[in-house]
Image 1 (tube, rainbow, N blue to C red):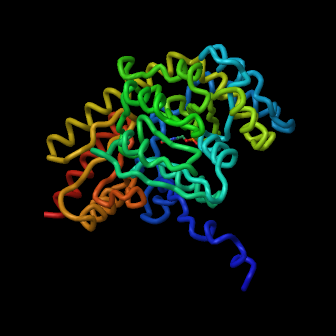
Image 2 (image 1 turned 45 degrees about the vertical axis):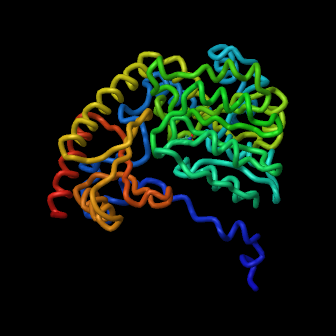
Amino acid sequence: MNLCDFAPEYIRAIQPYQPGKPISELAREMGLDESSIVKLASNENPLGTSPLALDAMIHALYEVARYPDGSGFALKAALSKRYAVSAEQIILGNGSNDVLDLAARVFLKQGAAAVYSQHAFAVYPLVVQAIGANGISVPARDYGHDLTAMLDAITPETRIVFIASPNNPTGTLSSAEDLLHFMEHVSRDVLVVLDEAYNEYLPEANRTDSIEWLKRFPNLLITRTFSKVYGLAGVRVGYGLAHPDVANLMNRVRQPFNVNSIGLAGALAALDDHEFVQRSYAQNRAGMMQLTDGFRKLGIEYIPSYGNFLTFRVKGDATNTQKIYQSILQQGVIVRPLGIYEMPHHLRVTIGLESENHKFLKSLEHAIGELD
Ligand SMILES: *Cc1c(COP(=O)(O)O)cnc(C)c1O
């Protein structure tokens, strides 16, 4: 036996998370110029970062000798005002992934269980497995969450249900009506984590009043992020909104300085940059049209999406999908294979700038041509 053999079996069984391939890596591998590469693999904001946030972060750089404000006072105050919740209801995280992890660490243990959907965000099984708890994956319906089946899958040991709406990588949305029905029927002994990372990309008509629901459901945790529409994925800021008692427990487990000072400054400024958020939203709608039009012209099947990405299926078997992925990659466009999501026939593309979407569609057309 060596040291690593003493690590718990459930830790050694974890499949490492596969992030989108970084631009620098592809450039090295293929001998391409970095500036010619289009990365549409990680649902990042193609417009970059809010200029107000950039400015705030540059100023914050001069203060990095100091620890960040571990309470995140200013950001919590701004979120509290924006969403009409108390600061005691907010948990700040090093990305919303950190908040998901905190929820697992507070409410799960070995022998406990968490329910999530097939094809749901890969971080849910990861945080559950890191505790040694049991993950219960519920078959998807039309690629989306089957909330009725998820309700039925809850066992007496279940302490968390993860719901992503919109979900990544399928882009599916659970309706407000279905979510509310779920909340009204789930036991109060189960924490419902409603992951709304793409909330800001939803048209007004598709938004749910989930934050209002916090008043009725002490077992609801809503998670949001600055990584997507706010364009701050690299500095890692996300947050959770919950009942004060839930937030209190999560804040006890949280590392005292889990959110760094540059992230705090950037998030605070980004929250008020309505112009940037609006521009990002509009750009995403236009890019969504461009890509779905392109898919239709190429005869490519796709799953209608409510996020800033589209998941599509190429004809033939999983080997074909892999070939298309490689061919697109060789043409300098990075998309995301979905094998780890039990979707080996699909690829996910993030909606980019008009020129990036164009390059992606051209590379896809070329890749399909190579197959025939
Ligand atoms: C991108 C994404 C997040 C955000 O993760 P961060 O840690 O905040 O960057 C959360 N949930 C889903 C479903 C996502 O796709």
